[in-house]
Each structure stands twice: as structure tokens, then as C-alpha cells.
Image (cartoon, rainbow, N blue to C red; front, side, top):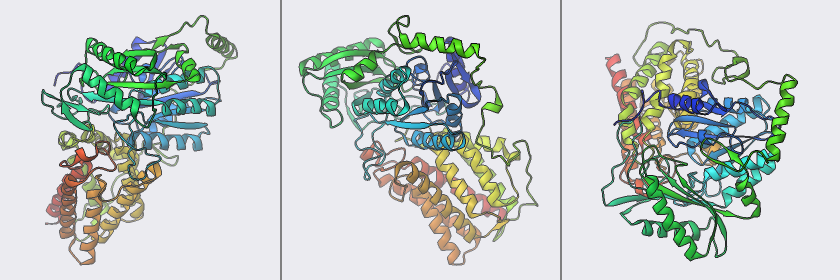
Amino acid sequence: MKKIMNTPQSYVIDMCRGIAAAYPELEFAEKFKIVKKKDINTSKVTLISGGGSGHEPAHAGFVGRGMLDAAVCGDVFASPSQVQIYNALKLTASDKGTLMIVKNYSGDCMNFNGAGADAAEEVGIKIDTVYVNDDVAVTGSSYTNDDYVVGRRGVAGTMFVHKIAGAAAEQGKDLPEVKRLAQKAIDNLASIGFALSSCTPPAKGTPIFSLDEDKIEFGVGIHGEPGKSTDNYATADELASKMVAQLADNAVIKLSRGDEIAVIVNGFGATPLSELYILNNSVASIIADRGYKVHKTLVGNYMTSLDMAGASVTFLKLDEELKALLDYPVSTPALVWGGAADDESALALEAMRAISKALGVTKAKADEPNKVKSVSVSKEDDADAVYTVKGKPVYGDTLNTAAFVEVVDKMADIVIANEVPFCDADKMGDGDFGMSIAKGFRQLKQDWGSRKKGNIGEFLLSCSEVIKEYCGGASGPIWGSAFKYAGKAAVGKESVTLSDIAAIMQAANTGVYETGKRSFGKGAVVGDKTLVDALKPCADALEAAAAAGDKLADGVVKGAKAAVEGAEATKTFVAVLGRAGTVGEKSIGYPDAGAYGLGVIFTGLAEFIVSKIK
């Protein structure tokens, strides 16, 4: 792998610094990886969006007048954490409220929803949310279809939602009206994409999937994951014909002759503009044959997938209301049109700013800690305190607190050592699984001294704070909830038996289930092809071993074996939830990466515990 970078760990920070250096009207709140306007207009509805990095210019490139007020930047292909989003909401707080524009991915939904609830409750910010799900390669919707809860992904059409909502907010519309117009854009959006190659995430170092020279992946998302089908290579005309048919004839927008549309021909990062224009030529010809009217066409890189070769096409069905908002002046790093001189709202905004400065009103600064409260540490905590373990580790038919802390430390070592293999196992997802959890456990080891270790429950709850904040994407809320529920099950315990460990693992599984249920109306169960397929069998095996009177060492070995068998079984499952949920039957033959990871982790922990007891 050859990339222009310093290290995979500094990739996003260095990129965001570069964006802020190029556009002085923007600033980078580095602690929380937020790219925002320097001047936040608190008299209009503010807009925040974001997601995993690697999609540039989305989303930071759409921060500016007429679009976003802030973009929250996660690690490559990993959702930003709730703490990041919470602080973005605080930095962009407005008298008229904030609209969060969220792409329909599990991690994004869980983290934005959690942050929004915290900000609304703790700070009193008015918040509403829309979920972009324009990818017609995937059927169903997270919010309407109980049988297919992963739902359509948010892809390149998200930019049109930013544009429509941004114009409405700039015109002074209130939060319910801005949300209505953003949702109207979503309801009239459809996108479809294909890949000629995979991409190479910096932390992984190798492509997510391989593709023969005579094949393409059709119906891909924006995370380098495989598509809905592997098809034979086709000409631009053939691809355009298939794509336009799927966009125009699906149940989402149902185009008819005479309908007016806006079009995006979007590159995925490694496709030359010449090829995008060739594809646009083919798309435009088919559109003309079908009798649709094109109001505006955008050709270029707007929602990329690192260095993936390929493209997507987006249609936005227009009426006069949406067309006026689309045409409204905009000025961002990645999108500029319309004149500012004759823009009455821009003149009014400048007047308002002048008045505010004259009155001594100042904007919130990202480097003022009293105005940017992290929610990772509770009010009672002393963030600088060092918590030590009472006594020496004791291993046997019980594990004391010191031994349990050693086990979790060993767990962190296993995760970090398997960062790349866990990424490699994420073949049906976006290849970031290992990076996402390794980041969290690496931070946990760094913060080891500040974790409370008075008893096992207290320790697990303290660990959950770091895991929730620093594990990337969906792993943050999922693994964080597992640790939190496990901690609640062990509150006050200074030692645990095999039966206690079984109860802790069952509680962790409940945490994962409840997190999914809160976000999507359905929690993961065995058979959905998620990490639960390893976690639940492990917990059940531990419980059965305890009931049978097994020694602790024998019980943990049985639990690890059940986890591995559960992970192996996922090869035969069609994914319903989780990272492979969007590729459906194509996931057959591959284990779920989360379940596989738990099998490796539990096996390593069982070997470690047995070695200590002997």
C-alpha cells in the first residue's frame, strides 16, 4: 500500500487540518474532529452531518453558507462517536434548533441518536433528525420494514439533502419546516452505484475485496464493501441503461415522462473525470429517450470511497419548491453557485453579525473547555485520578478483581494484536472492524490508570466509558453497551464465580440487544449474522457449565468453543442485521466479522485463564 499519509492513526486529523488550512472561513475543533464554520449564525436553524472519513469531499467539504454548519469526522469508514457528535451539537447550538442529517448506517444512527438525546436532555438544545436512505440497490427501510431492518443506505444523494435543507435554513425557516423540506428531498431521491475495484483503507493496508478484470460489483455502497451482485464488465452505455432503469422504475420516486430531475454522476475516488463524463453522456442520452427533463447535472467526486474505482448516479425528482431551494446560492469548499451580492439573506446575515459584534456577542470557541463539555466522564469522576487494584490477582474457581482486570487487559492485547486480521475478516462490510475496536482498546490501555478498579462492576462500567467513546462506528455503542450492562450485572462484586461470569456475559448480550432495539426497533438475535451469534452461545455455554458444576477453567473453555462454533455457523446465514445486512444472500459463505472476532478473543482469554489457574 502506498498512500500520501504519515500514519494510519493520524490520517483523519492531518486531513482535517489540511481542510481548515485551505479554507480560512472554516475551523477544525481537533479534540472532537469537527470541521465547522468559524461564525455560527445562532438566529437560524443549524445543520450538522458527518460519518466516517474517506468519503471526501463529503462531509467537511459541504460546510459553508447554504449547506452545513458542521461536519463530524469519524475514522475512515467508521461513524463518529456520541461524544464527538454531542460536542458538535453544542458548538452549533442555535436559538432555532439543529437538524441532524444522518446517513442510514447502523453506527451513524446509533451514535447520532444517542448524542442528540443527550444534548436535548442535558443542554436543552432543540434537535430533530432526518435519515437519508437513497440507495435503491438495497430494499426495505430501517423504520418501516420489520423483516429487513438494515434498510437502504445513505449515499451520494445525501449531498442534495444538505443543499435543500441548507437553503431552507439560510432563508430563516423554522426547524419543523427545514426538516419537512429535507425529508421531502429524501422521499424523492434515488441512487445506484457500481465498482470496478475495491478500495484500500489505510489501517488495513490491502483491498477489502478482490475483483477479476472482467467483473464489476453492481449495487455497491460507499465503504468499499461488495455490491449486491458481481456482474460481467459492461460498456458505459450498458451500465447507464441498467442504472437509469433501476433509478427511474423503482418504487422510491417512480419517474414518468415529462418529470424534471437533478442528476449527480459521482466518482468513488479513483475514476478519472474523463470516464465520469463518458458515463454522464450515456446517462443523459437515456434520460432524453425516456422523456425526463434535466434541470441540473453535477459530475465529479462528491461522495467517494477512498481510492475505489467506480461511480454512482443519483436522481432527485423536482417540483418548483425543491428546484428553488436547489438553485439557492451556496458557497462551500466542494459546491459553489449563485451570486452572494444580490442574496438578501446574505446581506441580512452580515448585518446581524455586525450588530452582534457591536454588542459584544462572541461565538463559542472550540478550545474553551468550559464551553465544550465532554460527556465521557461523569460529574462525580475525577478525570485525573489514578485508580489502583486492591490485592494481587487470584485465579481459581473464583477470579478476584485484580485477576478480572488482568483478563480485560489481556482482551485488549488480543484485540490490538488482531487489528489487521479482524479487518481482513470484514469482507462483507467495510473492512474497518479491526481498526474500530482496536482504537477503543488501545485508548483503554492508555487510560488504564484512570479506570476505577474498586470492584469488578465498577471497573467494567468505567471501561465502558472509553469503549463507547473511542471504538469507531457501530462498535462504540454496541461494545460500550455490552461493557455497561456487564458492569451493572457485577456491581459490588470483588470476585466472580463461573456462574457470575455467565451472568455477566448474558448481561452483555442484553446490552447489545437493547442498543439495537432502541435504534432500529429490533435487537440482534442468534441467526441475524452479528456478533450475537458468538456472544449468546458463549453465555449459554457458560451458564450450562456452571449449572453442571464444572470448574471455572473448564467452563470458560466450553464458552470459548461455543463462541467459535457460533461464529462458524454464520457462514451459512443470510445477514439480516449488522455490517453485512445490505448485501443479503451474498454474505453466505463468509462469517460475520464481529462473531469471528469474539471467537478469537474468547479463545485467547480462555487459554490465558487456564494458564493462570494451572
